[in-house]
Length: 356
Image (cartoon, rainbow, N blue to C red; front, side):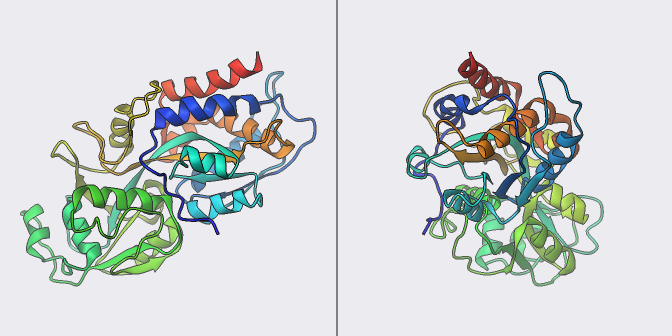
């Protein structure tokens, strides 16, 4: 049985880019002669982008250098953990996850990975009568809500962060994921960094939640928050936008309350060392920077590492190569942040070098 796929220690994004992608570079082929659908599973966080890329990919202009492969993308948004499990069983061609596998896991499951996009995880609330200003929260109070210690919106800890806001004396209903999730991993990482009381609960794609309603997928959490008065939940930015949810401003490492929006996600991504091959830990959660939003995640694609690659893996690589090169505007339009140019350059340079 596949364990909760959490890296042993904090794997750095640069280490993944340099150590893993150089190996993955050998996969990128010329377009396969036979058309074939691409089957994937995993992250609900990135599902809207993969759907959009799939549509745009099949409608892209054919050129001598580019021919779309396959007749579509068949993607199951089952959560990061289940997606990686399905890939290890070779039930799909690729998995998408916000939890990068460690080097040991890559070797154990005979897979490789690379990043494709950055996005924000927002704290959404359903509270009537707040006015136009966003609710303000910090990691410690947010942890206490999910620990069941802060149970009312009128609690002094919440009121202290929102002195100019009239908060109802109403019971808070926390909403959280029911499935193994990269969104949960990033959210619990943020709580653990901010709250000593949360650390015994831990960081993971699944944890032993002390309280709250469970919902499946980001859309399930968004729907539950929208339908439940005085609820709070954590979802990806695109799901919160589609559901029309109010989004809280969170206190970042620089001591500023930051509203979740693409510019704040870009500020978090800009602080990462995307070029270096150093092995020290790098994370976009609680990133440094005045304008950096504190819960930002990177989506990785995981594929079989067989050499030579099978036709399905080659088809998947052709699709994601197109996405990295031509899908940035679609990503931005959905509220994601395209990989910074240094990261894209490094990925594509690795593939180009291998083809020479």
